Length: 213
Ligand SMILES: N[C@@H](CCC(=O)N[C@@H](CS)C(=O)NCC(=O)O)C(=O)O
Image 1 (cartoon, protein in one colour):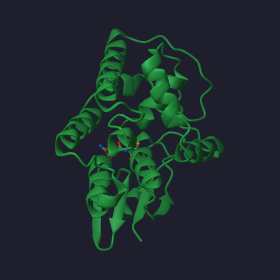
Image 2 (cartoon, rainbow, N blue to C red):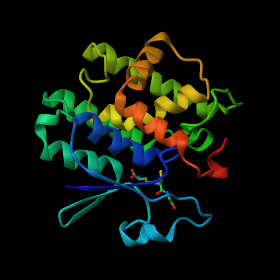
Image 3 (tube, helix red, strand yellow):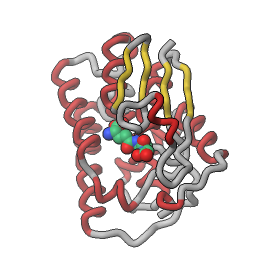
């Protein structure tokens, strides 16, 4: 069974992506949570991660790092999971959206860390954060209009897994979002996988000050 190394469920947005993708898809994996509750990172990461970061998937003798690469590996190994949309054109758009998530939205990610435990409350944000949220809402609205929903590309796909931490950010930092965005967020938040991760994150003892905006 593959082993998925993750960090704190309350804060580790990159860990959340493959975890929710594999869980919704019903892929068996062993979870190993290694918390990053130390100032200079947890030295234990070096024993399993080539980048000293999580997430990492160990599948037999292969180690895969980077959240999107982990999701892609599992999606191609288990085509029946439909983690990649079946239609080639739709799949390419799901890849583009996932790559955009991986490489963009630095302002939002920096100012509004994922935080499952946070009480819903707005904070003052810069124009760059507002711009990131605007682009995300436009992207989601286009995807949902083209697919008909309820997920970005119709059925749950790895693109939804890639954006799951953004659903938390828009929610707990109380961004004013469109009804379309809110409906999509609600769709993701009622997934049992979401609720299991959120409950576990809230129950964690670790506080990472720099992630408490
Ligand atoms: N691009 C990477 C980002 C991985 C990442 O930044 N992981 C964070 C946790 S969310 C981490 O391991 N931080 C610990 C550290 O940098 O010491 C991915 O997609 O997996």
